[in-house]
Length: 446
Image (cartoon, rainbow, N blue to C red; front, side):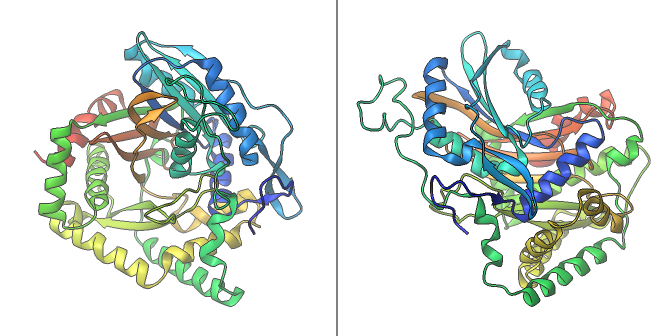
């Protein structure tokens, strides 16, 4: 159901939204801040914070979804109108060398369904970073990118002259009607209950086959209280990015995601081998956007599915074999409609209490969810924000725990970046200190 602009009706969570809500509750039960993300825009210059607050006020007036909060209803969690004023922009002074530490601290600050987003400006010695901080059930990385792009647009004030050239006023029109929370249910819309059950059974059997081979996560190995999110960023130069792209074309002959998954799996496997462990397989969920490849404008809700890939020990030792294995698994997922089966499974699971939901999720894998988490949301095309040139832009999620280790890839300005996220307690200082160089080597070759 598409809710017209301005209607005050509860908007139920989609299956993937509810999945992220369950993850949030599990993470909080482990003493962590929760399941949320940052979208970071590094600017060439300083923002006028007063004008930025006006942009946000105008955006909230144009898009009622930004004023929603999450509540319990008889039909399950749903978004409803929240009459509270929008949050004002926070400004924090940081050194240029301290930006990464500031982002680690920010992603561990709690946002939740009562106030599902916040905005912060990190002010360095000579430039600013704008950070949009959101609760993961609210949207996904591509939705966040589109929202920030819309917020920073320079269309001028509705019904009046634009602001000065360096900050032309922000969005003048509301987002299109398809930018609503209900998009994640569309692949199931034409399927009856019988068809959905068949897809759910097919997906369940697929995961049970994977579960016949054990996996291990760093969260389980830690066996102690976990701490805050930590991140190691690897940003390739333009020349290194071109070298990686040549390697993809020459060796993979497939989407770049295969090479990224393999590089991360080899990095992760090296950590385990350093501890004397050699699991027979690594299981990796890879999000897949359901937005159209061109012309997508959706901002709200998680419009993704996931493909779960298994990499065996023999795959890790042979790039050609690994690429062939991943390609065959991807074709099987499409052929057997396992991507839609996941959505059907999550849609049925929404009615299950959170504790039981998580038990069903981890039961086949003896308490595990996956070996690690991988995501490649793709290139960010944001060139300006509030009239200022954009140096860099990327999504930075808190680390889902379990498994407690993840790699997020993105591109901006012709450069490939990777964020390796982990939580305190799963890696030693020596292991953490070697992550950047090891991943760079896996991506580019020795």
